[in-house]
Amino acid sequence: GGGGGGKLDPGLIMEQVKVQIAVANAQELLQRMTDKCFRKCIGKPGGALDNSEQKCIAMCMDRYMDSWNTVSRAYNSRLQRERANM
Amino acid sequence: RGHSGSAMDAPSAGLGGADPQLQRFIEVETQKQRFQQLVHQMTELCWEKCMDKPGPKLDSRAETCFVNCVERFIDTSQFILNRLEQTQKSKSAFSESLSD
Image (cartoon, rainbow over all chains, first blue to last red; front, side, top):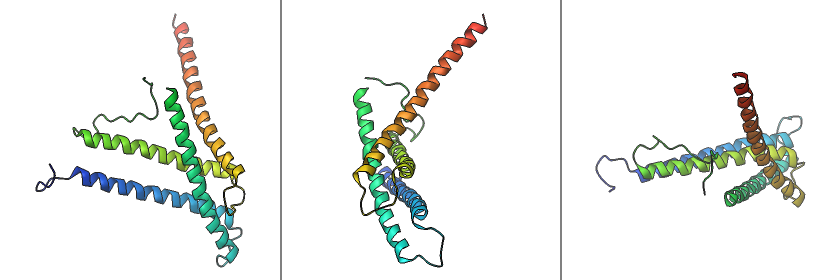
């Protein structure tokens, strides 16, 4: 199949859905990261982000990614263990 | 090797119509999304418990905390499900004896 006139290509749809899901996940990550790093790095909001605040945010972003990856690995390990025990 | 009522089962009846390829795709992506969502949620929760001041790297104490946090979160979830199941069982035994 594939290439027929006017027919929806399921392969293409699946790829598009995957992309949309990836975008949604990136947005979710960014939203939570912004929330956490704002809380950690910004005290009393001034007239602009000063250098220390910017440095803090940059480090915070990297640590958040590290944390996310650690959690992802730990959760995956747990799932494997659960499956092995079934 | 069966398992009952796992949270990982995706109901697929009716989704994707008759196309098994699409149905399979939906199952897989749904499961992946469940995983992603839980990682987001646990990262958020465990960050509060495990992260003091963000430094130049994730030190081993924080890393251990995150790993423990994930394990304990899942333990908590299972504990709640199990206990709920038990209290339901004892409730129905109780109401059965009432109707005698």
